[in-house]
Amino acid sequence: MKNRIKELREQKGMTQEQLGRLIGTSRQAVNAIETEKFEPSIWIAYDIAQVFGCAIEEIFLFEESTKKSRAERSRGGL
Amino acid sequence: MKNRIKELREQKGMTQEQLGRLIGTSRQAVNAIETEKFEPSIWIAYDIAQVFGCAIEEIFLFEESTKKSRAERSRGGL
DNA sequence: GACTTTTGTAATGTTAACTTGACATATACT
DNA sequence: AGTATATGTCAAGTTAACATTACAAAAGTC
Image (cartoon, rainbow over all chains, first blue to last red; front, side):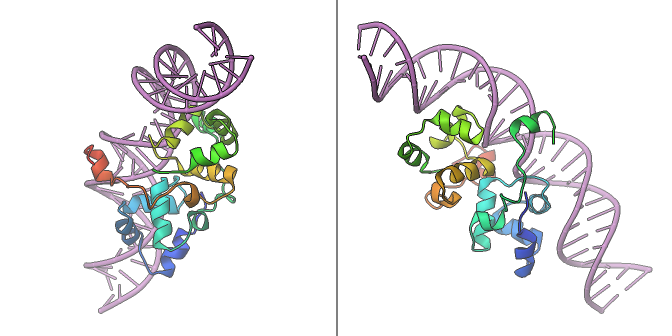
């Protein structure tokens, strides 16, 4: 899903690795979420929002993102 | 994690099944999240928040909940 | 009490969000 | 050019969030 992680992270002069260590996750996970490879868990979403001092919805742009239904995902569609 | 799903759901006179159908998930998933058996995915958290017209953080009470670190979960601890 | 609806829960299976390690690329500095 | 740092990505393994089916316990209704 679309997000503002890179924008806010660079605003704070942080690397992906630094952000990962801050919230207790791996650099690769931060990178994958930032580049929309996969969806964050709710705790990672919350932790990132906390780091940047805003709400989850301000960082992760649900409305601008397309949600695959589980049915679609199961059959590898869309 | 602690949440206000039951409270808000009953306020609207909805059953777990109705809420599940509304957001496109199963009754059991709604029940498990409501009774804190497991954490919601970020999309389910968002969809539930949308149904009740509030922010994710107003329904899922992160601060009152304890987050297991992945290390703790992996070794089955805490 | 009988019947229905709602909720809780267990079993089994699938999938994707993670972890770690490794390697390639890009950028920057000297 | 060489070295360090940041990012992107892949492979392999683990785990938990789901789906589905089924059944039991509660709660409400007659």
